[in-house]
Image (cartoon, rainbow, N blue to C red; front, side, top):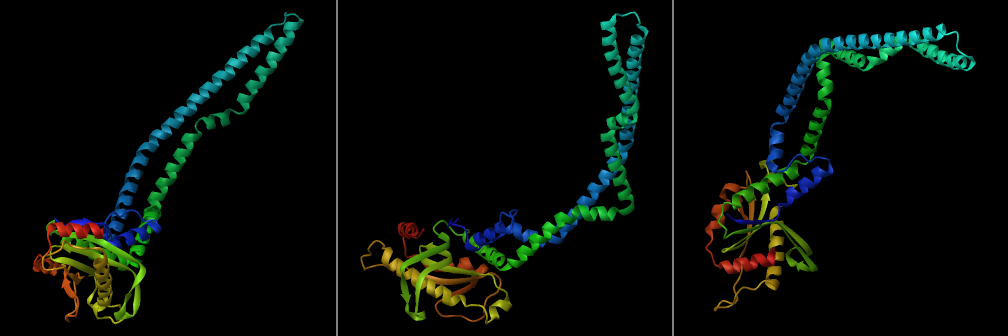
Length: 349
């Protein structure tokens, strides 16, 4: 398998854009493709899952409601018995104090105070009996009330309940879809570049692929053909092999895009990168001296089209479909040694 270094640029840009917009569910281009393909079925799954959950909740609520009502009755009876018992106990103590008439003066004062507080407590229970009983079953009453309301809503407007429950999930799903739609160029690029990487991985480990290859120049180099100074270059894929170096640009374009005059030609872009890379290699990379003289490192320009390509051939660059890629690369005879390939790789990574 070919040796691969670095992540493809369009995938990094796509991940960054999605994270900036709060979307972190995707780990690969494949997951994005699957999401877009299955968007409608995922929405339907959410609706069906919520509908099933609602039906189960209704059934469970109906089953548990009778038990909750019984528990409330028991809680009320228990609290009623407790309060009645307390009132009876207080009254017994009050009667005992009232029967005692022969106590001395100090004991009468103490008894009077005790009688006061016993009557006050007894009055509190008598006056607030209903309230105290209700408080003991308040939590159960609230739960029963909510359950009855849910059952009534389920019976009268089940679809509205489903709609309300799926709203946030569906909105989140549609938001993700809208973000992906607005990023379709990045997605298309990431899909194309990812396919190219997968295809090149099928080659042997004699091949070295550097994704998102970048060079910066200070001072800039002058590109006479376009009368411009080149400060930096970025190449989708740089393939180093015993046959030389391949500058690979990937385009996942439709037939309409290929024929559009508004899109910038990738040919000029790749020729510019070729000139800059050739200049850099000439100054920075030397191969072992051949007995005939200084050995040249061939640099070939290659544009890979995923599904469609122009019918015309162009100077200085080969244009191949994805399925033609590896056969084209393997066509060239090896002129470099493994040591030279590794040396070039070390210098360019």
